[in-house]
Amino acid sequence: MDCSDNPYGLLFEAISMIPISHYALGLLCILIVVLYNFLEFHLLEDLLTGFRGSPVSLTYNSCSEIYEGVASKCKILHGRYMAIVLLHGDQGKLVAEQHFGFALEEAYGL
Image (cartoon, rainbow, N blue to C red; front, side, top):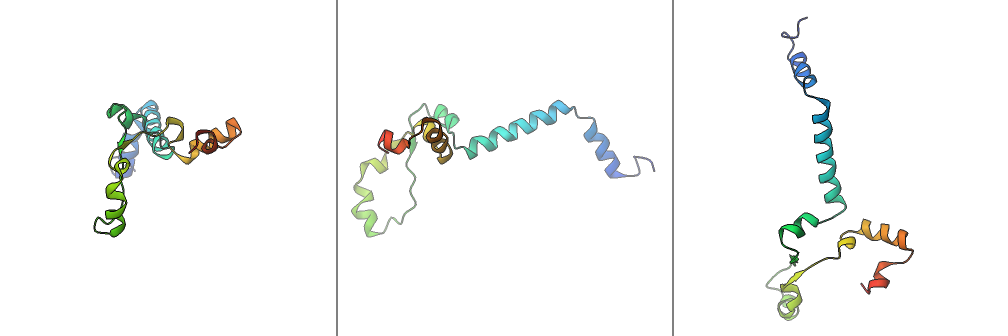
């Protein structure tokens, strides 16, 4: 059977012509994106916003009495916040706790 008769053979031939380094680069890019999102490092977002912080995003019902009584009067919730670089995600907290030997919440008063 000739490769021109089989579309899968043609596809395999085309795939085999791509250098291995391109596959490795693509896999590295995917790995970096997955780790960046999994570990919740927001360094690129912080760089693009000039380290001004992110706006607080809340899920709430703006017609509720609690919002009218509490959240609408709390100026902190209407501003921006900047997370500590090492403490973006729970994984970072666990690694730091294992490395330093104490809970970071106690050390930083979080």
